[in-house]
Length: 227
Image 1 (tube, rainbow, N blue to C red):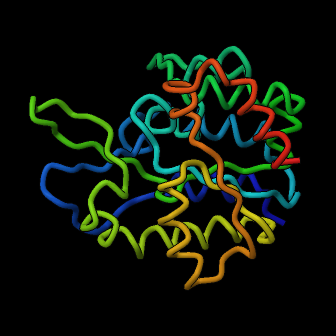
Image 2 (cartoon, rainbow, N blue to C red; image 1 turned 90 degrees about the vertical axis):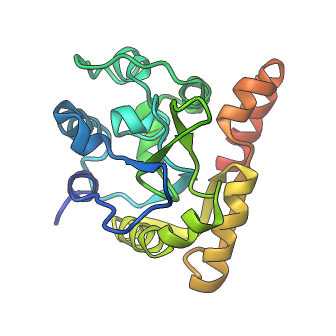
């Protein structure tokens, strides 16, 4: 039987968005843009997912430039990969606020090995997006920032979610990160009935940026609902 890890590795290797996008928006695909990322991702999933256990699903928005958009692993920057997961990255160095919160929560859950044995983290769109701002700089773009972008991605999002559920996901409850993200996921889930119920958390980036003094309270909330 193919392991959970090998299913994720194959999925990531084949990730591609074949459709069109609105003007000034580009796909962020670390698996095609950095040759080292495939081996890093393979090392991560082989280390924590080399089994056939069922896991619960945590769903973020879409990869950002400094997290999964760089490392290929959701909510995991190179600092956390090196210091906590013991997987070294040579080609890039990133520090991402969401990763800080997630790994502090994981530590209190019981550590990376215990957490990843129970949960698999993905995003509604497994590929990220960047757009040019008024200063012509490339910045992060969320799949829901523009209705035309969400509409263009709908089939890709649904197909990607179904593929990942087939890895061995418990479909009783899924966990959504970000209230706006949950709103859009609910549109999909109400029609497709992918999960029986949804639990919504404030997004780690929001907590780190605006509610850092209450971080312990938010971590406790995550742990209480994930338990």
